[in-house]
Length: 176
Image (cartoon, rainbow, N blue to C red):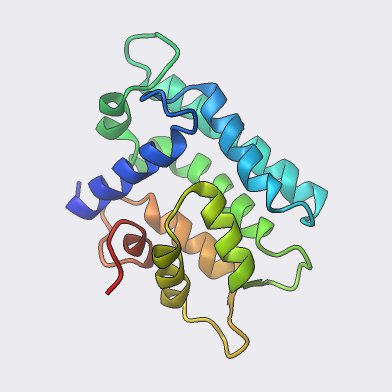
């Protein structure tokens, strides 16, 4: 696995551990969904439901595949060992990517404004300079918008271990 992918996995573990207890559990996924949905109150109900459902599925896939000792939680070691395995997590990551990107487009025009992107990514816990750098990597249009498709593709790339130099790498490094 590329070093960039290892860094991305470590950051995601940190952000997913919403209750800060050092392991991942079902409550973390509920808390993360609640935080993101709290800033997306104007999103379509089906988009909101899709995010909540994708978070539940993501937890089910993770605990089913990674909880090697059967304690109902995922340690950092269990997570990092195989979280970026596209064969195991590809469908869950795809559902999540589509759901999160759709929350960014409450008016269903296929575009996400920077302010909306910043709010959603801040709710996840990413740092503002990194979020702005990521948004810029998606090459916004003159009205400072990116496409839903480009963000969803960027999320999928983030969970692909063989990729480096992708926009998502800007979330784990300090922008210049």
